[in-house]
Length: 405
Image 1 (cartoon, rainbow, N blue to C red):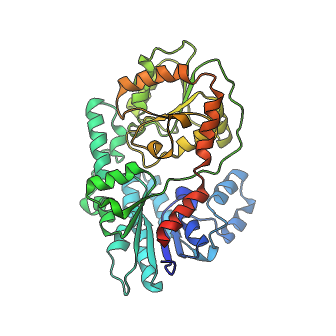
Image 2: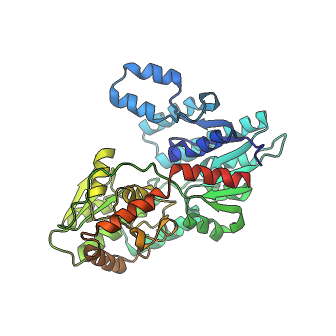
Image 3: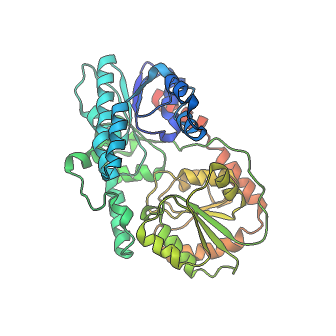
């Protein structure tokens, strides 16, 4: 099917622009529709701006994507920021405005008789539109199906009352059916579905999707240089990086950290830009925990490289890029089956798995790893080797191979 050309659409720097880049490399990119992208004129205008802002603008660019193929919805971007300033719930704003990317993709595909390669929040309108041709409809389901997420999160909320703030994401606002179905049912109209993890595919199968329609292509990472050698013995130091909410299982980690019989000098570092209120209270009540909110990429790599273990016991995770980031620095990881971990390695690779939501087992795993990992530099080498198998180049080749099949 190499004669196909695709319209791709999503907001932000989703997956480091690797999907439109994969299409461009293969000569299959008709158009990439996004929000704010650093086109040449914008980079030229930014030359006199402060360095931090220039870097932020430059970050929204991928040299391998032809600028002529990029279409920016600047009006939607401005509308989004205005709603944020007015205090509108972000989740409602995204659900309302994401349709514009899908509608723009539909209009472009109809005009150029192209096919569609759309991320799950931006597919509904384009997949259900009428066309003068029969476009191939390819979906990237980057987050697990919302029905499975809702079930898992609600069960956890009942087990841990007062922790579920991040479950709603809308400050108690219920989205209307017309908005809810956009992400819930887009897969029904897809000819081919990509998932970054087997867990995401499992969520679609549970919703009724035929497994044969799904292709698993794990995300990748550009392998960095090891920032700093592991210091070896000494204290057990665990680190968690992510939003401080229910979905990441941070409350499970904090409860387990309290209960675990760990060496007295053990410490847990949390790198979280935001914390749910109930979880913030748990942090305050848990000993030997350091909370950091502003950490640069270089600092984060040093933290991975010098920590004994990265731990994030997520309830629901489409992939979990931070696991690869930690492994790339030689740091073993601990997470749940509801992530990418079953797809990327085993305990021989420094990849450890604990049952989702089971604080008792998580406690035991922390106690075991506090002893097992200390001073094991060979396992850290294997952890980095594990990450090296998952490059962005391999991700792009996986996308291209599945499309060409």
